[in-house]
Length: 462
Image (cartoon, rainbow, N blue to C red; front, side, top):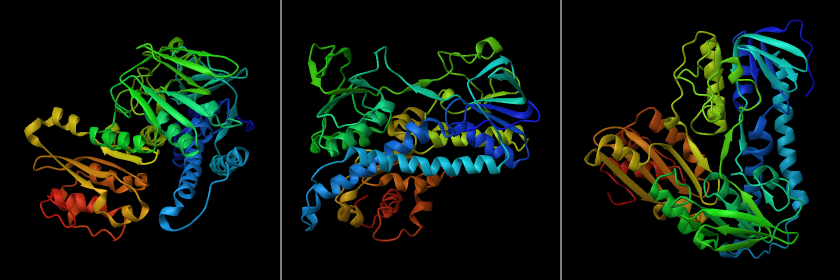
């Protein structure tokens, strides 16, 4: 990324950070005729493109290919997985990132956005200094993103975060993963497919603790079948490493030996050192709180993406960025509600959900006012062809709309689009039931669940 010459250092909008939220805001604002300065010390695209969503999903695809080879005999094809060339795997991953990065740079350039390379710091409520030059915006958008949490552990050697895990030069023979939520289970899935002995340690009572309990049960069953070890309801008390390995000590006194330790306990807001508080912006434990229109406490200053408390998802960042650009332009867009944002965990089997879980619905509406239905993929032809187990679970307010869709199964992340429409358009089971779903597809599992919840099941029992 090179610095673009600017005739002026005053813009309609100055954006600090060019990750998912920042560059989305820049592109939409430019479409709406606003002058934009986009400040980034690293690469446009941020965590998601370079060390997050995209590279991990590339590795997960390689893992899927490895699984297909390992299980090919079940469909009559005799093949063997001889080895995994990690150098070529990383080249595949890096090639995807490079192509997407080049395309994104082209979009930014074509939009006429002034890109400023360097580390920015606020020197006023809406003024950012970069390399000794100041850039002032009529509006300022904070989009500095997040960093991997480390729980105070020293990262280096045999103790890594997801960032380092994406560039390992060789596969470890065994890994202990501290953290059993999205990042932890995705890396566990990849490494297990690559033949690595994996153990997950999760302090809460289950894996993926924020998802519906029905999905948790299914995932834990699938991981046991895959021989992915996990210990839930127990925290680690320390990690020690030597030249030959690492030891994770649990609070119950148990010791786990491994080649590598992955710290996957989520991500925290990246807000320190940017001068936010000095500029009068409220910061709460690193987060920048906003109202529903993503305004901070300082007029004309907005925050988007992982910096704002809530779901940490790239597509939430995109939505935030677009929203703020349209808000500044006076278009009065609809606020972004976290519960309406689709969530996908790309392990095998994949988890996809939108809306609230059954426990959340019961808390909101009362036990007597909640109805649920679980459609088992054992009755879905395409899922049987693919050899996947799983469920589609619908949660509805009694006599009301569907408020949650929760799915697990191979490739079910691709079904989250219709699920998002169902929840966000407040569809009733009867509305979905009258839509014709192609057969045989995994997508028709959503239709079958809706048919059953509407009282007219076809390939299932009500």
